[in-house]
Length: 116
Picture 1 (cartoon, rainbow, N blue to C red):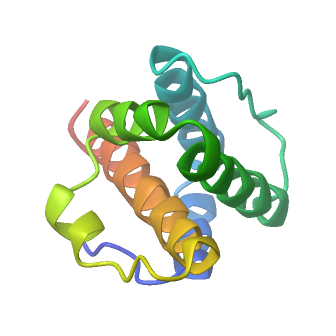
Picture 2: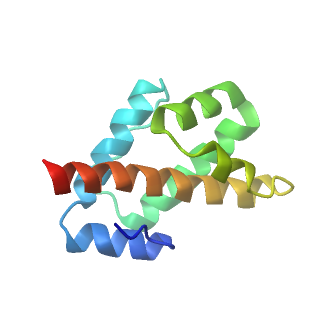
């Protein structure tokens, strides 16, 4: 599996394999497990998904850090990848974290599709 290096590549691959809605469902499932009140519509535009996810991650970092850490744990984002980010600009970091979340969720969806 080649993990996409940009948001656009990830969405393109998800649409090519007709897995975009499953990606959104996986995000919703993990946010629900983390008790974070965010439910994406399955037909959400990729640009809106990116914006809302980024905004939510930013708010969690700013206001609810323990819930943010719990979300990363539930989604299983690599601690090594998080520590490698530059934390001086919270807005930029939250955008990078949002992409790491999407990448991890994409891996889950892709593996389920490939091996089920």
